[in-house]
Image (cartoon, rainbow, N blue to C red; front, side, top):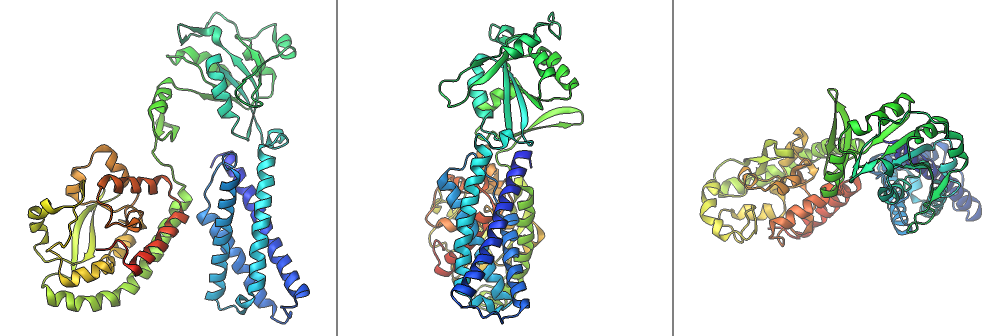
Length: 507
């Protein structure tokens, strides 16, 4: 987690934590002394458990479901929605924990309700002033955490580039050097005849001019130099980082500059022309550069997910799979009798499926079709109602009578809890295709496999029987991958329960 995101995370955590403590204390005092609904004879042990449950719910919510969003990019509506979702989740978990341990204080609904209202008021107010402090004139741009930044670029790039950099509240741009004098015919050519150091340093710093960007409010940045004298400025002034955004075509063009700045201990961020072009064409812009075996390589990814949240997701999968298996065993045992009586054959159906990024695994289901179902599929392809690579037809003759019932109730999916426990699948994800379906995929289709497949997912809770276009399935899967977080998984699981109970979209 980078410095800015880490700082924002812990500041928001601190504000929300203090807000929670205040809401508990004030609600207790108000309900006991103003309303007289608390006698004070409940016992310290009950109150300790009450507070522990509240704090535990808070930390589970924050570390398990927190989504990092740049506070600069959140508007008032997004901030309000983000806060109310977090607060509701905390108190839902809190009341659930009280119910699990059977704490009598769960009956203090007035105090819990007041705590929730105060918690929301305090968090929304605290985050509002945090945002003003972080992004305002007297925010972190004046604090010790600020990274002082210099920029080396050209006039045609300066406005857009500096405007983008200024969105980062953790940096303070102290000056820009416009090096258009080194550009010939659209190509940056560094003049090696210039000597580092200059007798003009003092005059530059004392008579700095300013360039104004008319289309951006308060985006004027001091222009320090237009030639090699910027090196003297970097030597003499306070700078933690230097951003270089120049139209060079050979690494040797800027080698001397980077080498000189590195020698000063300054962190250098250098644009790579090849990456400039790739970013222009890319739909995602998730690029990370790192040294591998001594070579600087750029890493491109359509979606970047928080590793902590992924670990929590796997932990939830393991717990959920174990619970699911325990609950499924008696259901499967009861279902097995009519299923095997109607259609002799194996109880479980095993089929090779394609999982995360092309990994092959055997997916398990309760057999809902006759034994010769796969052999008969070819002759039924003309009845396929799906527009694409998936197969689905109305009144499929291969499905047994019992099979139709267990499909409608989603009982046939229960053995997949074993796949989840093994790690081949997740509780929530994208639906794994068959090998034949996968072999027909175009490049864009494979992106739906960039996360571990799931028992349920965005497609399943969006009315799967009504969706007949495979491209729509891909769109929903990619939407899930791009916007994934633990809260989204929770929402899909809750919708899945509704779908199973009401049989919406089931066949």
